[in-house]
Image (cartoon, rainbow, N blue to C red; front, side, top):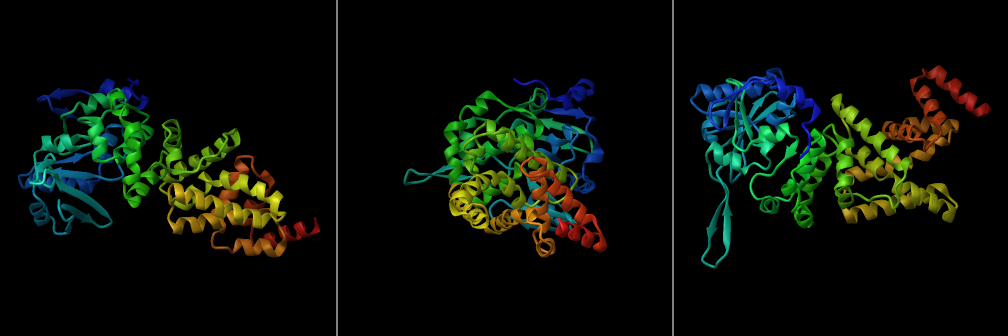
Length: 420
């Protein structure tokens, strides 16, 4: 059992809770300002019309940590038709189990009806059909959730926290614990393995031993998951503001090598390069800036390209041809292990192929490189190489000064290069 995460120590020391029952707690320590006004409005409308309504899942967990959630999911005992009727700007989605998206300009609040436990229906041929598209109670809905810390319900209108599975206690002790039989729950959806480790990385928590034990046995089932869904889950490790800690967890749990080519040997240079790239990614995400997956993959796989490029330069005696051969070989190997969308690999190849041009500072090529559509991404990548001592830092300094210069200063800088 791990210690309480530092961010929660003071929080749990100070908060006051009054038990209403075994499951309901008066809880006033959540910062309401972190909750979307539209999520609160949605809950108020449902409650004003005689229905129960709560925030649920990761949003409640993050609020307890003092983190502003990215998304707000609402659950209620109202049916989809009843929800849709209450909100003029809403749409029903889903075929079997319908959800309602309530639309407020650019923000969408997803509202779902309490869901019942999965039912197994025996067939005449001895097979069993699993049916899980029925409405249920709040207790049944909580039982369907994956982890105890994701199974808490919170009402921002009356500050009531509903916790059926001691999620608050697990949160206090820094534990991620599966609800129900872990092996069975992982078999139902192997993606839960990735979610467990992603939450560990995000919140600096520990996976409960019984919840960890079946993972080695279940991991091969991940390859039966549709690629698009698996790809989305893997990318969330890196593009949700905790890429560096996610990378460390993935390495420690031997998950990274399941999806990405890994260097044949480890070195401080490789660790520094990837760590710097992940730190920059986290910084951009936390500043609400965009981060292209192409750039992420380009630095995660660069050392495989770099090692082969060095090898082929000696064999082929032509640097650019060697680089192209190295790039093609690495992409081919990566696709066999875990395919990356073609639109991303095209950008990755351009970023890599532009790297030698930063060192080749002839006047015509400088301006041609500056006008390249992928210049900015390639430039950021080159700075990462300088930052990690893979490239002479003077090259990064020169290009940074060149970009910031006006046209007259650019011309002078190029002339100075020509004289040299």
